[in-house]
Length: 317
Ligand code: SAM
Ligand code: DTB
Ligand code: SF4
View 1: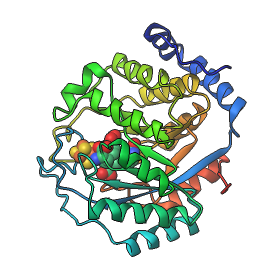
View 2: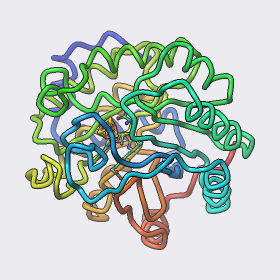
View 3: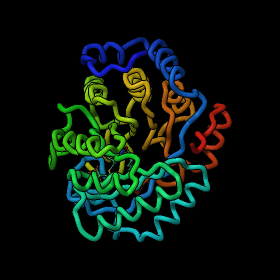
View 4: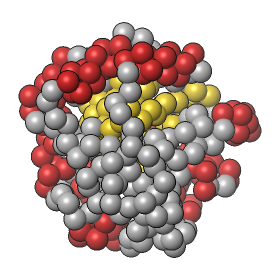
């Protein structure tokens, strides 16, 4: 199938609402045209600056506005990051992602430090990704020069629902940073969260935004809300796991060349749901006991899952 960038919302809605088994079947077919169906990329996540964020994202335990039991940390040292990256590499990661609880990156010592971290990880021949909030053109250029592979900046949900989740910035702010990342020649990692109380139409709306980007994001993380006590969404209603499967399958059909990452929230999924997500075209995960601040499945659990499903980890290029 050709890559398309002119999807209408109606087209996407009708794909998303297909009979589930047809949808998953078509997604798997699209997946096999461009990817090795048994291969899943292993990524490692590290919080390099935790907590105290001025934004009000209703799902996030790192916002300073909520009491979610996350304590503020200083920016990690270069040595701490290097060690974590070396460990991740030894454990099989081919991508290392560093997250900071910032509204935006600010020029100065901390940013210079992050550039050093990017250089250090890049020298280990892993893909290196950062998520630091909003960027200027100049910051994006400097990150690219330091060897950054990808920048993660999520749209999270549909434009209509966004204001119910975040009030301290606008959808357009996100889009502007994504354009700057693209202009700097950095791969775009952009996706969202399901389980925020959004509707099917909101999930369709998010996918529409992503699928109309030209080029498509190289990687599309689909997070399941990790409900954290103390955040406004701490008691959100549990999502029907099949809505996650539909979201992943539709993402795979709309953006067949992208890596679709089954990101946060795997601890709340059964093995069977995870299997359906891989069948629907997910081909990347975060592995290791911790995401940024919340727990992730243990390594031996994931190893057993891979073994039982016949999945293998993507080798280093
Ligand atoms: N502060 C930067 C930003 O917001 O772009 C970077 C870090 S932020 C923690 C990265 C992403 O993590 C968010 O865009 C959101 O999609 C995801 N995230 C945060 N808290 C989450 C939660 N409780 N459950 C699922 N995903 C979450
Ligand atoms: C993404 O889409 N998911 C990751 C990564 N990008 C930075 C973050 C998940 C965070 C989950 C909540 C936590 O552990 O704090
Ligand atoms: Fe801050 Fe990012 Fe959390 Fe929003 S998602 S509160 S911007 S760390």
